Amino acid sequence: MPNILTNLIDNQTVKYGDREVFRHKNSIDGDWIITSWTQFKQQVEAIACAMETLGLNPQENLAVFSSNRPEILISDYAAYANRAVPVSIYSTSSTGQVEYIINDSKSRILFVGNAEQYKIARSIINKCPSIMLIVTFDNVTRDADDETTMTFSQMLNLGNNASDDCKNEVKKRQAEAKEDDIATIIYTSGTTGEPKGAVLPHSCFDAVMEIHKERLTTLSDEDTSVCFLPLSHIFEKAWSSFCMFMGMRFAINYDTKNVQQTLKEFRPTCMCSVPRFWEKVYTGINEKIGEMTGLKKFMVKQAIKTGYRRNLNYARLGKKAPWWLETKYRFFEKKVLKTLQMAIGVENGNIFPTAGAPMSANITEFLHACGINIVIGYGLSETCATVTCYPNPGFELNSAGTVMPRVQIRIGEQNEIQVKGPTILREYYNKPKETAEAFTEDGWFRTGDAGLIDENGNLAITDRLKDLLKTSNGKYIAPQAIETRLGEDKYIEQVAVIGERRKYVTAIIIPAFEALKEYAEEKKIQYRNLEELVKNADIKAMIQERIDSLQAGFANYEKIKKFTLLPKAFTMEAGELTNTLKIRRAVIRTRYAREIEAMYC
Image 1 (cartoon, rainbow, N blue to C red):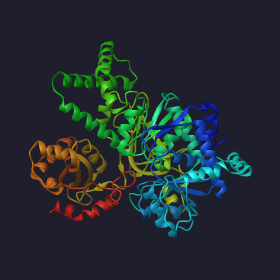
Image 2: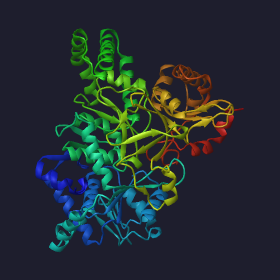
Image 3: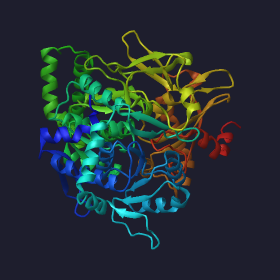
Image 4: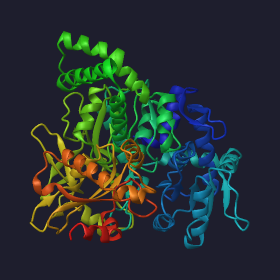
């Protein structure tokens, strides 16, 4: 069977022709620009011919270093047409990370998005001997001595003027594509050590498309989505391809800061995201409710209470709600919940897949009560995204759902989740030792995550094995569970739990600064800067009170005994977060060693 991604554009253009495939915003006036399947096919064919003209060979690597934009998809699918391998690099990657990935993958062509990424590319070009060409998506101002760069527009022109021999060669390569060809290499974020390139053949994506179509039965080509997460992230890369495979239209969101505006303008039925997005939605809704008074507040609380009973006690389990409850819910849905959903831009919602980190069951429960169908899932770069997700119906709130069709999971030593199936990586690029260590003797992939499977097949993630902390009293602590619970709070933005070989648990906490400033203003707390604000005794007492409330239900040895508030956030630029916003615990422990030691004096 031909590879799905290699032939996707041709097949869908025959089916949909001038119908929209995606839209993106004009950087000049902010208007939406719609691209049809026919136009997309023309652009992909032109770039594919340009790649062949420039000497790119089958199964050769090229790199894409940019934030979300249509050119990434065009470049990826042009590479598939040549049987070449696009390697994604996060737009927020440091110079050192970009240099490492280019040299490890030996990419010959480097696509970059804007002037900032062009600057990084130019700074490493003499350290990356494989690069023969830089292609800029934006029309950046080139360095005076730059003889290795062209714009994407120039590349399109090159492809449009390609010879018939070139076009025939691309068609030949496309016809010769095999399922064991490498489709892409996804470099893991690397919370510890250097990044590893997960080699994903086309057979993985073939399986992903069919498995998701089989599992996500409510989706069709009438659905719409927003491309929100970075296209360098396996979740968004696989999801956007799945949208195209299903014929779903989608809007490409350029900047994560603008996603709320994109949602309100496009009003999609779907969007894959990470928990932090929905945590902020949850906080925002509750803040609005807190500002309400009288009948309006009563109506909203009754609507959510009714939504909880109907959606969680009946719809979740595939049961028909009693007529009186259904009638009451329909009333509140029309009068209250739709208005709430419209304020976010999700009133047309079908499903909203969410993964990448744990999300509090309280938040998931609340969103379902509001009529927002959050579908929690679990997966990794190495598994081509989804391993498990909520079934419909019958999901369990404190779980990551049940296993996908034709994928297998089991629990190994130390409760490690192990996976087998057609979506698992072939190897880590150039890393035979790490590849061998990643698989058990009988061929199961070691995820490095700890979890449990209940009697109904629901997978619960407990923590990363490398993140588990052991106190000096011999007690094991799962920091992510504590961090996720504290993340529910409107005044807490980031948390790093500390406790390895310590006599009790502490935490470094980054407050939600805007909310904290509002609280200080309300309580007439005086401060000159953020450093003074986070050291204020009244602020600390307020945070302590909220932590104590949030930790109810945790064992005493798991509870945070002391904490330190910092006046600035953890960032990727400082090396404290990965590109997928996971905490680099070793960096945090080293960088804030003095603050940590002070909590144990």
